[in-house]
Length: 158
Image (cartoon, rainbow, N blue to C red; front, side, top):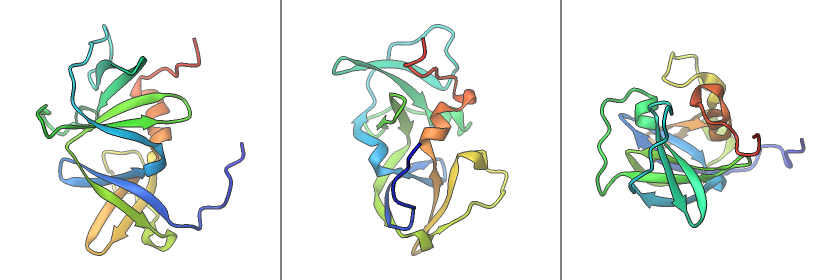
């Protein structure tokens, strides 16, 4: 698989919060931001898969990361944000507490993630992004969403 240029250029990340932590994902994977709509529940789905929504004719699974990371009982209100991700394998939505901004990080600002027994397996981490006094946990969202533990079957495979 060809990945294009080496990762020496600056990258833009969408910053969002879950609980006390701030995370970042590659902005190129983000299709849009939406409020939380009623979802259609799926029988026997894992708890963190809230259900699906119909987004302009595409059935999109909605994953609540707050449940996935055991951050207490999530609330759904007008501030709840759903990040619609458009990834190689499929389109999906991710519920987070809030979205702050888009930040640009140069490679020097990304440190490799220490083994810190975080909620996230370091397999899914790109590293830690540092910007002034902020620290963002940078997630490899493709890897995380296609991992077995997410319980999502890629659409292409029937």
